[in-house]
Length: 420
Image (cartoon, rainbow, N blue to C red; front, side, top):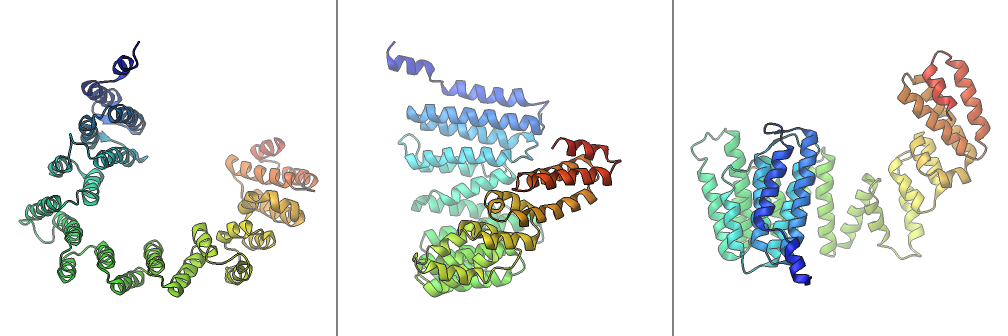
């Protein structure tokens, strides 16, 4: 059989894909509702269908059909009443926006950017709500930067603002729509290379916190590096009590320092980030890369002197540097049996007595507070760990005997211990 004929036999038409999509939603539904189990099944089947359609249609140059099918899936999902507590909506949205992005990048002659944009703008009329509407705004904001399309996007956003002009200024919906649209317009003005004074003035009309971050990035594009740096410094100060936000802004400021070759500021801020986020190995690796192999031991020791004792975030660094002496000290200060288990291979071999002592102390605590089977199993796991340590077998057996004698009425505990 000719290869092309076989290929055509295996290729599904758009209508077949569309019918399958409808069938998937219908078969998973319970009178229009999808509980968490059904939503998980629905997610898998929709994503599998889209993945198959993507391979099929891209290979045949059927970009228009793939775009239409993915849009139908997007709308159907947005209208479905479902329990997506396991994050299915975000997953489906990512699959679909990835398809849109690939269609956008392919620039097929059969579907231009103007056609795609018209569909997106049409469906920002309330048809799609909540998270999926945010996806549309994000996709539009990150695409369609041709001059005529920037104008279309700006005009559309202006009409959205006008549509809520009759609402009270205290109305939450009005505030949300106006600020979201103006923030998007701010980015458009920058892409249109409008005067910076005009952009700064426009930013003052937006009350959202992220406006400053957008403005800082625009200042960078326009070459006003010092302005951008000062904005990020202000954001760090304003979010001093919010570690997550402050760290995000400090990371961005660090990257600006690096890109602008402000070496001293860059190293200082990177070091601060490393010390305040010890569990984040990326900061440690970035810091280490700054120094030559013969420089690093001294710099490393200076760094280690600054680490707070008992902070488990340092464990990974000590382990990677081969400083198991400091790792063992740190685990003992923290009384951290979980970290000991993580690095048991190295620590059991080098410090068996210290490991056993720490684990015995932990086992005694666990035995004293254990009051149900799940906690008895934790105790049994700790004793198994002791048993694996050189010289720990006899001690483990002694502990089992001791706990059975101390707590004769805990039959479930005795049962778990005897399984060791």
